[in-house]
Image 1 (tube, rainbow, N blue to C red):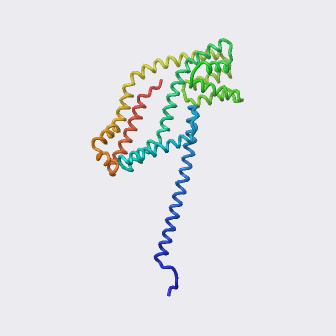
Image 2: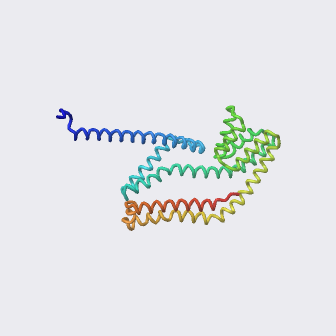
Length: 287
């Protein structure tokens, strides 16, 4: 009576299969677009970080290394514990190169600030001897070591290519992110425009930075115990978990295989990270 059409069962299965395939394709397209956008943003940020560090490593290689570290961490902890633990540690391994860049940038900034005192003294003597400011900076580039020679060389290169000297100095201050260098650049710009003894200004800034370093080193030596305690207390939960894994492996597996355990791990990680940055902010001396 209804004609010779397809049976309802196979037709319904075909519609459901088509709908599922469409949903899967849409989800895959969205994930692929999100991955491409994140990769682009990550590579752009890595390019800036590598440029600030004067590194020759490719940003694409940094992203591939992040994926490699995440894959190794996932497989290792998935085999040792379970898949959830593998995913948890894979996230941390993926962001490890970015953490390394931040630490390397902070260390480079500290070394630059220490070299800046000697560079200012050298440039002050050169200016008193009759050299121009670019010539004094060339002397710093020849006589000193990185990272200050890299930054000074970049300024001189930009200046020779036609960039305004003040803009080249501002670009250097932006790359380094040093408060002392910001003061120096602003002083040089004001003096060049209004007139004044640049060599004397360099000598005064060098004396100020040297005295500040002396006081800062004393205070940091007094606060070193608190910093060491912050690192030790932050690492202790993870060290205990690692020791417990070799003693009672089942207890560690429960942390990553039950809802209560996952909540406990999340809370512990949040509290440890919050406590670490809180203590670090307290011990961060601003002189």
